[in-house]
Length: 251
Ligand code: MBD
Ligand code: FE
Image 1 (cartoon, rainbow, N blue to C red):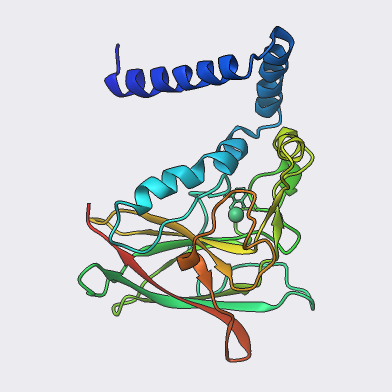
Image 2 (cartoon, protein in one colour):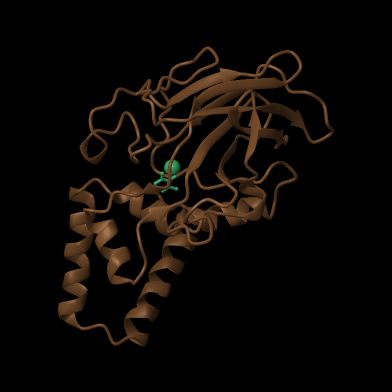
């Protein structure tokens, strides 16, 4: 069955790629190497990763230009729908060199009204740059580590404690890392925490926040940093804290 939207977008994408092939006089051998490369991406299970490294920020730009809510950001490939609800604290592998991080704030609507009972998913990497629940490169860390869901209270407030994430290197031993290196780029992202805020009757908000002054904030390999997403370093109760007041909007 013909799908008009697929027709429009797929046709435009193929036209755009054909133009690149012609403009750069791509040879048969180069084309074949490209096909082999795509097979390697699939084999390494990096299809999601490579898509998000290069293209997710563009989708976010489109959304950002059309929203009255908080700034959206790239979701990346490591969201897990089945993360558990947590009671004020994400499960982490605590050790002496893991610093605590307190996250709290509110969820409001565009008119400033509190949004109670919104579900917030929070996820981030281990200090050594792995995400739970993905296996392979990431090890076999169970899905309940470094991620969880919480709900806003009757005043729209939320709060959760975790450990401070470190600058993060995307999987760099596979085809995505190899391409970035051949392109003269690198595989680093600034330390970040991901959020997804959902409430019936509102547009979901997917975002992530970075730490002011953090390494790679100015040269994220995923092009995911916007000024509104960089939070100043603040301290509360002897802990580094990020205070985030989210605004979500109706469709
Ligand atoms: C990540 O952790 C991430 O957040 C993105 C956007 C891409 C790759 C890895
Ligand atoms: Fe991430």
